[in-house]
Image (tube, rainbow, N blue to C red; front, top):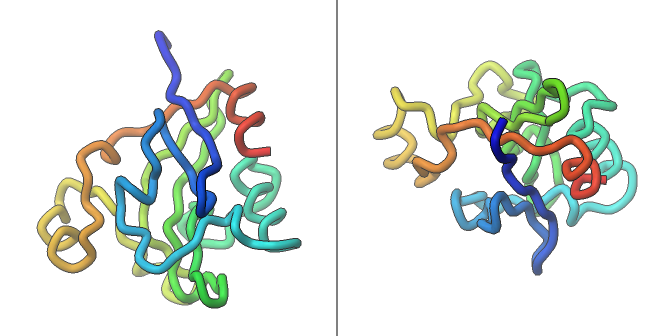
Length: 145
């Protein structure tokens, strides 16, 4: 692979940025807060999931990035991503709204077939999210952990 994407976590409020673009600027996080805004056990559990050290809380296998700002309950729906480890990198793909209560009803944020529905009902669609993001293993661990 010629080049990797860059992941960072920071800002105010804290949030994810990919290649210098805040994720909450690319999509409407809909009243959700970054998992790094949480305290204690919940934050540690979600971060371990992003490192593939803990199982996904969703049937889809995705891991939460942004959760309900009021209660952090996954039943309220979370912006989540599929995380895989391939050779020397971590890959983020299949960004979607997922719910522990309605896991079967998770819908993709940027699925080509659902662009109209997503744009009309949730204002989440952005072309830049259609692809997977590849993060060098060492850089990923440095950002996430």
